[in-house]
Structures are given as structure tokens and as C-alpha cells.
Length: 205
View 1: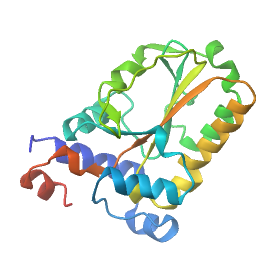
View 2: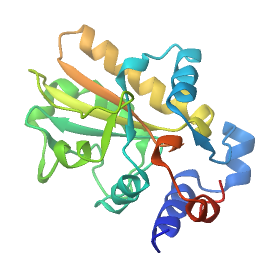
View 3: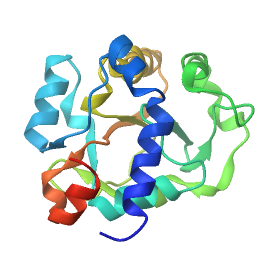
């Protein structure tokens, strides 16, 4: 395993989950395990979530690259992009947390009037991920915005209270005439990554 993969991924789990014992008790957060497409689709179906919008990382290297992107990769979180695919942050200041996402989604119809970061485009992220049938993801179509929501089966009730709630809000905005293309980016560790024994051991999976 390349030095840095393990530390990067363990760091992201620490940052996004905080105190593990507390998170397990309050939100049912579990230790990450290796999953496959069937298992994550079954999980979504049990929560009445549309499985056709699911994306996964291509491999462990792609996942590690995403964690190193500016701003990192949080689980769960939502990443917003305008009609041109340029990044729009819901954070007014760096320390803001994803509790602000609910209100931000409510104002999504005005996304093209908000401050954008042209140095970050959705295509950079799409190059690291794929559909559950292992096909490339494209931004073709006439949409007002694109949203990528990160989630993982081990996140427990955080999925319901955050990621899946955001899906409901996006669906509501869509019903009001705003053209939204959203994806659910699964951040579990996957069988199709074909990780080596050393990588699996280093990640304590």
C-alpha cells in the first residue's frame, strides 16, 4: 500500500466521525467494512432511496485522491456545482458545518447568482468516480445545478438525518421547477477495488 493511503483515509474517518464511541452510541456509526454494489443498493432500498443515482469511487487510489482535494472529503456532506459545473460552497466561512446545507438547498434556485469557485469543477471529481455498472459519469443535459451527496453504510443514522434528508429537500426543489441533477456518492470500501492484503490490513478492514 502506498504510504499515505492509510493515514489519509483514517484521518478522514476521524475528522468526519469525531469521537467514535460517542458516534456509535448516538448515531449507530459502525466500523467500516468492505462492501459490494449489491449490499449498498440493498441498504438504499431499505431506506426507500432511489438506487439509480448511486456512484462509487473507481478504486482506493481515486478515493485517496478525493481526500486530498482542497477542502477534503467529508461523510456525509453535499457538494454543489452550478449549471456550468463550477463549485459553489454552502459555507460562509471555513469552520461552518453541514448543518447549513438544509437552508442552502432552499435557496438553490438562485445558485447561479452565488459566488463560485471556477478553479473547482465537477469534472475533476467525476474523473474519480463511476456508476454502479462501472460506467463513466457525464454532466450532459440542461440542469440548473449538480449536487453530489456523500454517504456510507457505516455512517448509521447520520445518513437518515443528513444525506437522505438532503435528497428529500432536493426532490422538493425539483418539484418546484428547478432542474437538479444529483448523485449519491457512496464512500464505503469496495470489493471491486481489488485491494491487496497489505492495504486491507493497513485499513483494519
